[in-house]
Amino acid sequence: MQTPANIARHPIHPMLVTIPIGLWVCSLVCDFVRASGSGNPNWAVVALYTMVGGIAGALVAAIPGFIDMLSLQGGLKRIALTHMAINLTVVALYAVNVWMRTQGREPNTTLWLSVLTIALLLVSGWLGGKMVYVHGVAVENPPEPAPAKTEHRAGV
Picture 1 (spheres, rainbow, N blue to C red):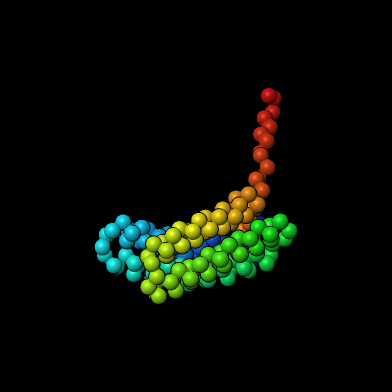
Picture 2: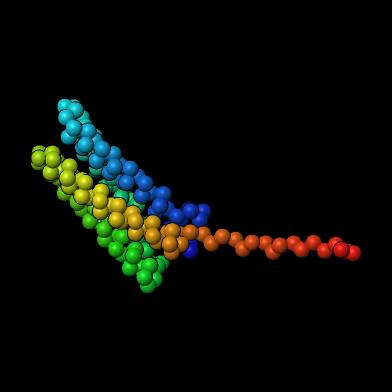
């Protein structure tokens, strides 16, 4: 089932979501390194910047995702709406996390908020995967196989 937001029949949303996911996972890893007592304040800075980059990337990825969602019907649309709602919650929680960090909040509080947000992101990713791998959303229909050639030999 092709979706409308594609480039040369390649869906755009799955290409773009790797950016915020990667940045947010990197941010969480930086938080854990900082929390382990490395003593280097740059880990917190990198965590903050990758978090902000993830927010920007998620907002860009949401545009083709929303366009694709509009083409869905019934149960698939419900799954897509849930996927979207969780993703918007993830973006909002990361925005709160960025605000808390810029206000000098306790680093362990922001670390645990990041852990919670990544857990929500995993749930959303599971729903996105379900749409693709179970329901075939954004999967091109394979071409029909060519009929098998039947070989006829005289006298056999």
